[in-house]
Image (cartoon, rainbow, N blue to C red; front, side, top):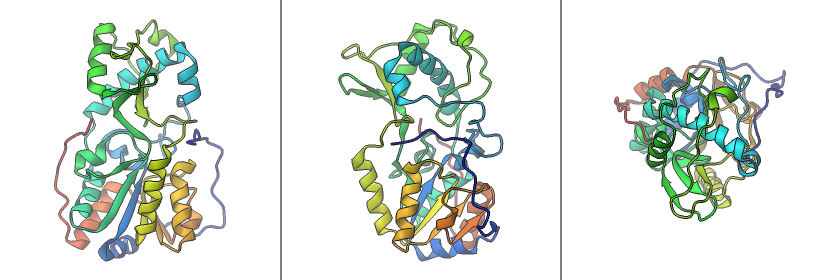
Length: 301
């Protein structure tokens, strides 16, 4: 189950300090077979905030849980009003240098796979077409009654038609695509039903309190088993859905390398943690390895 992140976790005091030496990452990638596990921190340079880093959204934002969404019509109205507004920001976001570097490493055969905890589609927009979306993607919606999937852009069009003139100013946008709106701003926002059966629509993402599909988890575990090393990029590893793969790798003796500006819940399992901004760090590694990063800017949403 994907648990809602909290602010209560504190890193152990006896861990070695982070470094700025990128040599271990360059060496691991140069050897090939690296599995990337990315989190919200890789998308901050695209204008999408993370939960826990500097300026993170968790202190002001409580993510919607699956239980709230499915049990309350009012909660769904609040969610879709906020998500509809946030979608506009996500739709404008473009892959940054970090996403492009990961895609370049993949094209040059240095990666065994990519697992992302993000729902923003930016890895795919950069060219990592086979990235496993652990928590799903905001570019799809699913009916909880009949199971029909549909494109988010079509739902956005229908919501625009049902809510003409809806354009409140949000206090901020969050990594789950949810905009910060108060109840007055949400007002009487109209939610539209499934066009097939009239049922409740939900974004095809794993909400907090909802389980990641077992087959997806097993696929990720198989990727971990086949990797020569695990490279964590921009994740605090606060939730178990990502941390379990770090623990799996460490238990199997597979080296874990973490690039994240803040301490993470997985630092005790890592052979190194590098505290640098991801875009410049990965670009530097690519230059050392002679891997051209390119400048693709296409969004996947």
